[in-house]
Image (cartoon, rainbow, N blue to C red; front, side, top):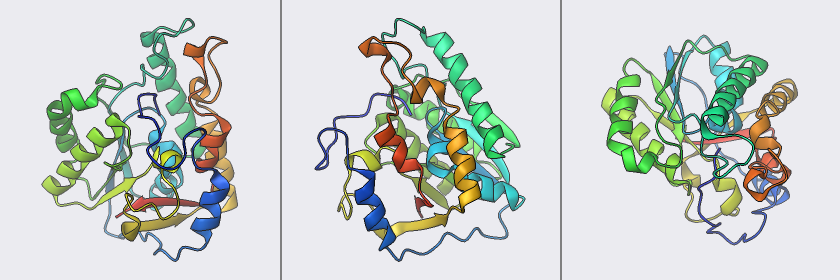
Length: 254
């Protein structure tokens, strides 16, 4: 993730919607399970920042890889904007660390990408370069059988721009789009009418894979721990946010 999302636009106005509320509500849903098409050979997985995909669909990525699907990862930014004004790390060093963190997280998760495309577009500035972004994502989607990307209603401008670009790419190559919510779990609430729950599909996460995903998320040191004591170096992913990504299910919109 990165900063740059607007103030919560749901009922939560401080720490976001508590994870206990989500878990109770999700447990009562009877959404269909996502069943990967046996004909899928290549998946394009798009992330706006170096951690979005692992957080939201890390288990699905692992399952696809285990099923023999080649994972082509697209990183729109290197995440250099997560701590604007930091007194500890300048943007180039922060980008270097975040790229290294995602590589470590994927290794811990047991995901070996067949290819990685790094666009190095500006963090928190994807909407301003959306035409360039869309062209790049459409090119990366060539030959893909399925496209995964942030949901274009996620209330983070980078996620939404990439979601729109991925939708265009999926349409261009005739592949299904699986959109994953990220910040939605913070600002929305159970049964929120702004969220397309009617398109929701679930991925079951068995305990061993859940433990691996938890260990992978811990690799994002620049995000899960403060860089320093100054407000500009505060943690991006505090425990109440991380709790949304430590469930026995993942949710995508098909």
